[in-house]
Length: 307
Image 1: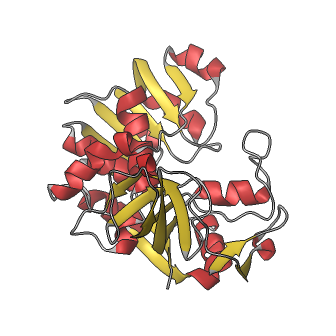
Image 2: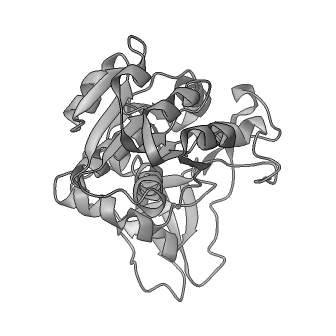
């Protein structure tokens, strides 16, 4: 089968397409999936560049990819949740940039019928991260005010929709085409961060969801009300600033499990959540696809199509 791999850390130049054997089922609870589409996430590039090797080392050669959609091609002897031919979403953590991938059945879920394979490959990490930040850690409630930094991005777009569905007042930051997208997805206010100072517009926010990090994060403390929360999926926020503004601020690791995706999947099936696929690339162009996402300014998800 065709797969994308690299043998050393580095730029996208280390990525190569290779021929490798189709993986075999190693556990009675594993399924083999014929991959149709793969979601690309920022962590794919972080792992490739070696930024994660202290906390998430990988064995070379490494096949990247943490989420995919496809069709069940084989099942282990103990599998009870799926059968041959089922269309599914798999949360694999690795090995998805390939024509076939194995996964434990507990990290697989049925694909919503109305979604294409590319849409299905775009939602797992987005929804799991949004659920982790907004509800598991943020405890967002109906009527509260949430500011979503990067509301036009893949995760930010999921956050906008899930926060709005929960009855929150949603303020999103975006730029360019992301402004219109965030409005379309239901944000009550959208601030173009390239044209405006966020701290002079947003006030008394209960929860800030930061998807971007960087120098802009410091400004986010100013919009929170005392006792509010700043939760980041990018970098650990300053505890000095948290103390200065009398708020809670910390990094949130995403829980990407089928259980944590339930709320988002329910919204999709109810027609209240729209998967946003920004651009698709064929599997062989994985390096170009990663560079496209890494360049920034992408509204929605970048997806690899697998033949």
